Image (cartoon, rainbow, N blue to C red; front, side):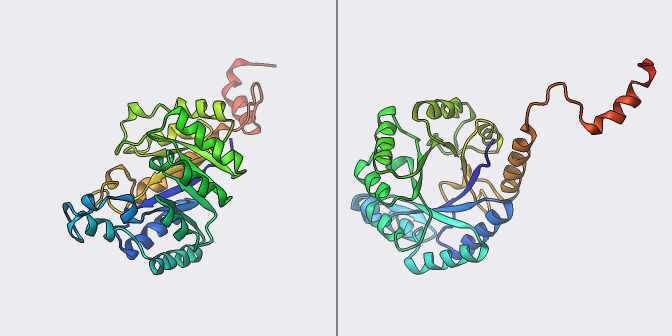
Length: 281
């Protein structure tokens, strides 16, 4: 079984705070994640003025606009993140939610793109991402077969490397909704690598997903699940991050190869001792 590419989804759990962000990056690196991921939005494109003007209490003010602005980092802040990730020797990338944000990410020398489940239905956007020729993770939450077919066709025609990520877009996801057999179905139908993007509480479903031969695993991370934010409850804290990767790596290592009827050299003396009473010749 191949090594899994582990993605720590910081998303918007940084709450607009670079110190929180750096702590999350530190935790992800320490736990063994290969990359951290963010979300980038031009809020005037993603949300209507009507929505942005609605009342909403948050740490940043009393309107939805103030809340959304509080969760978006500037270019200078992302430059600090870029420098910090280079210092810590961990990759970072982001899921853009609009074309302006995609162009914003072009300013950084990122290795990957991510199509959020919400964006898989925007074919013009997908074509723009595919033009960049960077390996792209495509989440399939809230998607029909037709949606996935069209996305795959766009990336294959553009000759852009990609992998699908089985995803259920509920927060937190119920265990009975995981339907991990979908991973095998996606592999068979599209003949491509398939990862898993999880929104569940706990680690059990992610452990199970790792046994389906996934190529990547993405989980939201947080410093504290009780912090402000809609994604915090579906996220894992530092201890869970360490347990997740350590356990999955042991699980994969334990699969090994078939050795039916073969006695390990370590077993020889033990067999002699435990079978001594049988007087075998």
